[in-house]
Image 1 (cartoon, helix red, strand yellow):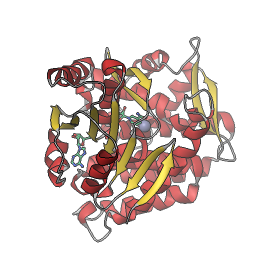
Image 2 (spheres, helix red, strand yellow):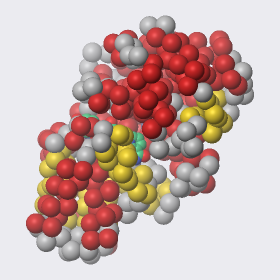
Image 3 (cartoon, helix red, strand yellow):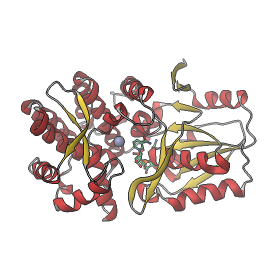
Image 4 (spheres, helix red, strand yellow):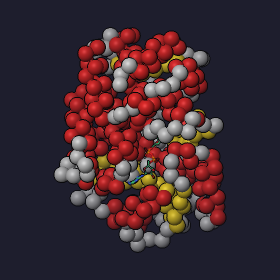
Length: 364
Ligand SMILES: NC(=O)c1ccc[n+]([C@@H]2O[C@H](COP(=O)([O-])OP(=O)(O)OC[C@H]3O[C@@H](n4cnc5c(N)ncnc54)[C@H](O)[C@@H]3O)[C@@H](O)[C@H]2O)c1
Ligand SMILES: [Zn+2]
């Protein structure tokens, strides 16, 4: 069964048969050449599952956030050029957020822009990275420093890809789903948290009785939350900023650990950021203290992040000040008020940040 949802004129297919959907798309659009961007994991676990009857060339890059840089983007451009891709070529980004962010950027800038399609293969990419038009790569070890807004022609989502994800990668995506719960629907937050905790106890994790089907509904719901906000404010002039909940401090952690060659996932960084955000929300906007504790206790049941809590506050704050979302030297953040409403552009001082980082260190 094929269900089609329109987001920004892009069709999102929840397809049981991705190969046929892709072929259908290609038969309706004439491209001179088709390229599929993969990393070694999505080559093995995702591309191998497809049986495609059309001709395509594979561009394979090395996986991982540390390769989300100008050299890899340059390699994608070179590969396209080497194969004589013209302006009517198509790039299919088959992978997680690293693939879709970089592939989308490379496609949007190659010969002033060629079409691209996203096929997200991680939970994080499904509910977040491939929806909303943000593309880019890290530069001088700063997260997503170079990029542009550009939408794919289509996004094909097939949750079956989630089955081969490692547990840590899956939980990485759960962080964004939990963020959606805090922003839009607290019952949804608890539902996702309980499902994840229950599933984490199962040795086989996703390939258990609690099949990926449970997540299909959650992926759809999370996309619809994000869609609503993005539709109102595509270029993040206002409302869209609420989607950065937990992300300012989260990104600072991400950049700091990236610089120090310590592997911290985006979602894990966002959880650290959301704990600080909750603390600041209590201190500044009267967010309920008990509720803060209940939410943090769910985070703790899902994520063991204690190994990341040995840092000096000033090192994290340094990265926050460099964040491209801050203006005129002010640190601006999204917080939740006493009615759980997300308020953006709240000015936070360095000492308030430092206190919230101290709070974080007491959590585990
Ligand atoms: N553009 C946006 O709006 C946006 C939003 C959120 C995050 N992001 C970006 O997304 C990136 C993180 O995305 P991610 O977590 O998907 O990371 P990722 O792309 O690095 O994927 C995580 C790992 O899983 C592997 N993998 C992917 N699909 C798999 C599958 N089905 N089976 C087995 N292994 C698989 C990958 O090879 C990689 O090793 C970050 O760079 C972040 O900045 C962008
Ligand atoms: Zn995120």
